[in-house]
Length: 226
Ligand SMILES: *Cc1c(COP(=O)(O)O)cnc(C)c1O
Image 1: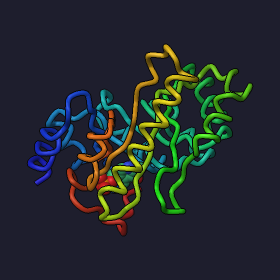
Image 2: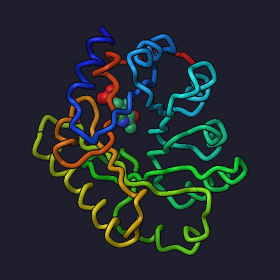
Image 3: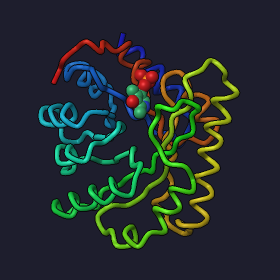
């Protein structure tokens, strides 16, 4: 089942779009199945779970952190994380920068934007992001690099609303690209699209889709893996 799902999702990607296989609540064996089919980028949303999986899975996996990151848990991921998708405050970015400095790393990060109607989703608005990028504190950070933006659309059957929200994230990306990141080659990622909406996200310019259940099947949230 996972094999067939993975092949279908991989075959549906537009050129230039990378797949983050979201493996939260899935076992090491399930991840290994997808790894053996060639997938190298996996996404997790809990720091301890990611640490435990990183410890036992092959070292050429790129681990992407996609969930809300609590400051006291940065230490569980900072030594090896390839991309943090979920920076939603200057304070969090400062803590990541500090932890990355201790590891002698420059850690790639995305700014997470609130593009959905739902109140519950984390994220910045454009004004908050501009204030962050304008701040002297950000100017002094040497151990983080902002590679782009991330967002989640509203969970709704209204495809046009989803499309509008993804388009709004692409607009934010383009605005930042032509202001704060002019000429910065590394600022190129738009992380948007999940199992239910990644085809629309790709049409609206996504470069990174985060797909879980379409590959691994539904999650069992009662599982206590870690
Ligand atoms: C769980 C999760 C996903 C994947 O969701 P699916 O609907 O299973 O594809 C993508 N992005 C984030 C931030 C997630 O937490």
